[in-house]
Image (cartoon, rainbow, N blue to C red; front, top):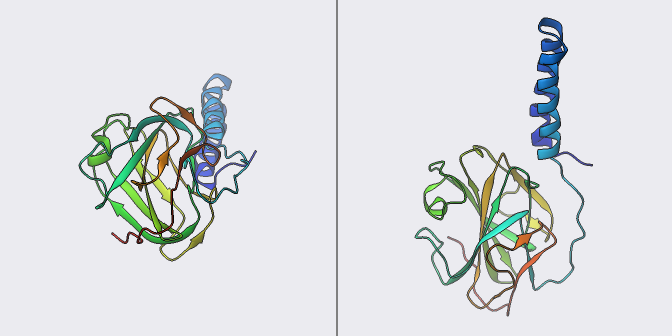
Length: 217
């Protein structure tokens, strides 16, 4: 299975510590770091996924559990009329992020903030996040990679002006986090609170039309 490149420093560091522990402490100490390396291999796993070709579908950008599905729940949503889908990623979920739609990236912007637990509703307003806006056939889709207590590092590998495709990998959030997706009010939400979703596979919404002006922030 593919491992996200962000994981190799953690995996390699754990194995180096295991060798050092074996030399200075013994097999018992080394075993702790070998187990840690195995956890990092598990955490940064990046399985291949079958991607739908339905251009009106909004795919889940992450694995996890749906926290919000409907009207925006916080104060810091983008300007405009939106519906919001929020997904909580536990440490056991795949943390590689995938694009919910294809189109042109119109904005990638980092916002500093706090590190509240990602499952708390106010985390969407107060925590550190990276916001990505995609113009999909004239309709804006906004997504936010939001850190939590354990997730203190966001990796986003796309930039403004990129042409992207639905289901493509674009980043990773390390050690438990949250993803917020803002879709046009005319879209039909296809998930409900507590649903489990799979990044790049689960259809979380369907877009109604292609006439909305692009959101530029």
